[in-house]
Structure formats: structure tokens, C-alpha cells
Length: 382
Ligand SMILES: [Zn+2]
Image (cartoon, rainbow, N blue to C red):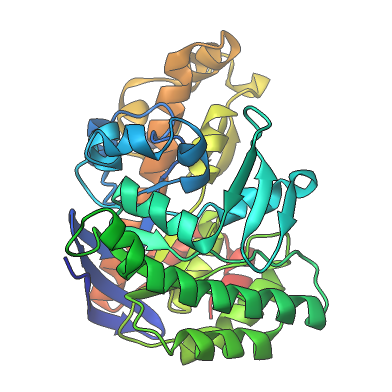
């Protein structure tokens, strides 16, 4: 199955596209809910589908440690294991390994680390990451990269980026070659995306893009952002890099972020996003609404019989009051986490629908007015 990306329209730098994958079509700009352990926390696959998710993200690092690739493969891959029939993107596992600062050792070969589950020694090379992602059968797999720490000097960022580029070439060779053959597959189950690194240093970002350009990637990601940099630093990298990225390939900004960050990146030409924010915040009672973020734990909602967001058409807002949502949260009821997650995912996925419609209509002003307070729009609008 070959991925096919078609751009159907642009508005300034913003792009409206359609990404055909082995398990279906992803309309872009797209947001991918994060399903760390093979589940988007608190949601059934049918609920995700009903909310309008076209694609979800699975975490290679967690799934390779638990339950392990063989058990997932025995279900026909991650789609069968988690009963999700639409596209799945898997990350490479690198980001989580690099977060285990005290537990890892990086060599040219790959990363050695202690399993946070049982303390056993585990190795993750580009080839290992491809083997796991091939076994998971994701529609989009990601090359293993060396995650540049932030802040990093030019020399540190260069060394890390250059290693990432060597690992990217090894990832590509193994995913489409020996790794695929070892599983007896005639063609790879999905497609591999390369990742642009280089920290906050624009010349390194452009060198990374040039190195990746030597291989026929189906899509490219921008990695190494959402690591604690300022909004200005992030936008500086995106504005310097995006005009040089190939127009005919989908562009995925990894790990970003808040609604305003997504809007700012769409306006600069990003097509795909993932972030734990809507689901994690939901479980902590932080809810995104048309009137700003609501902390449902706040005493002000104790006797509020009105809906969480009168402008929202989600299941939660149609049927339940703020007082009820606060009550469920205080009693630690499972339904509270579920209703909050339904609302926050609806908010994000509705934002993406509105952005797509705005690009199609040639007018993003209504969606920007609705989703960006005036002070934010000065920073976000390109
Ligand atoms: Zn709602």
C-alpha cells in the first residue's frame, strides 16, 4: 500500500489535504489523539470514531515493553489488538527512551536502557524500532531519531542531528528492506516518515532537511520542538524551515500542543499534530471551552446547572451540567474522566474541522476570532 497525499487547496501558507493510507483517509490539517498503551485513555474505538478522529497515535516504546510485539502481532497487529480499523501512526520509541535520562546510554549503534517495568537491559537501535513498528503494522511508522536536549549548543545540536540522519538512513533501509523481508511481507504494511532535527538552530534544521531529501520519504516530521522552548523560538524554526519543505509531502509537527500552537502551525503550513494535552488535561479537570480553559474542580462550578460550554455540541455538553462534572471529579468517578475526555477531544477535533473548512472557504478569520483571544492572535497569526 502506497500512501498518497493530495493537496486540495491552500490559503496563504495553510494547506488543506487528504492523506490516503492503508486503513483509510486522513483529512488534513489533522489532530491525532494519543493512545499510549494501545488505548486513547477512557475512550472506546467507536467513541473516537464518533468524535471524528481519522487517525490515532500508538507508542512503540510502551507497546514493545508491554505486552511485547509478538502478542500484538498475534492479533494481526495493533489495529486488531486495539480494535481500531482506521489509520494508526506509531512513534519510534526514541522520545520516551531519551526521557529516561538516568537509565540510558547512547552509542552510534543505538540506545541501551533499563526497562522501567522490570529493570532488565533493553536495546533500541533504528533496526529494533523498525522491527517493532513493522510488527505493530502501523499505517505510518517514524524513523528512530536522537532527541536533541534543550537547550543545546550548536555543537551538541549538530552532533545529535547528524546521528539522527545516519539513523534515519538505517531506519529507511531496514523498514523497506531486511526488516520487512524477515517478517515475510511482500510490501511494508505502511509508510515511513523522516524527522527533521537540529534544535533551535535554523542552519542545522536546513542541513537536516537536505540530508533527509536523499531518501524517498512519504512524509516528513518536525521533531525536537515542544521540549521547553519559547513560542517565539518554535515559530522562528517553523517559519525558517517550512518554506523549504517539499510541498507534495505531509508535514507532521510532533508533540504540539495547545490549540493556539496548532493554529499558529497550521497557518505556517503544518498538516498533522499529536499531543496528550486534550486527554491528559481532561483527566485533571482542565477543559477547553469557547470561553477559555475551565478548571472543573473550581468551587465556582459547585452549583452551576448550566452546561460546560453552551457553544459545544458534544455529548457531555448536551446532557450534563458543570455541577455534575465537578461532582464526578470530586468523587473520582470513572465517568467524569470519560465525559471530560469526550469534551476535550471534541474541542480539538472540531477545531481541526473548522480549520479545514476555513481553508476550503478561503477565509480563516471566523475560526481565528472564535479560537484565539485578540492578544494571542498577535503572536499566532503569520
Ligand atoms: Zn462539549
